[in-house]
Length: 229
Image (cartoon, rainbow, N blue to C red):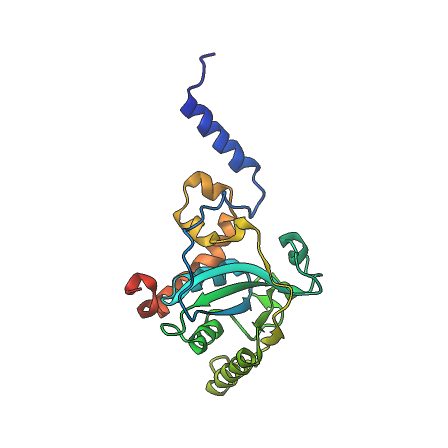
């Protein structure tokens, strides 16, 4: 048998990685260069179902500095995806959104939150079921709690949803950054090669995340980074 070239060996190795990757795992994260948050930046921690969906939406918004997927709530910090996804930990999948309030006020961050997920389904977003997928705002202080309640009252009064909102307001506790492969998950899927996508949960991205992101981009086109930010 002829000796394999270095290029062929590398291709074979990449293929084996894709075959044996765990479902849901992504390729090794390609971190974006970290830049300091703008002076006066604020942070909100939001739970609206699978963090892949919510993260992808906020990353597109003008005024958002960074979005980090993580876990919050429950009885202890340092939880893993396996523990949270069991539904028994009490924690929720969340995104930590850091933004410039001079460009994107906190009220707008929350208003958008209540339009990009269903805040009327208890412990559920579509086929994702369990308390880890609950709708929640994890407030850092009384001011954030009061603002979130104001927005909930506004959304209820305006009847943006036909059913009552079940979004909970919970004190921010036990926040833990999610594993690296969860960060920028949909961005990596959108820009990834066929081999990289093979090691990801491509079906979920195509059927669940992509339609949500596409709908968001159409609705908020004027507020996207790609349109002036």
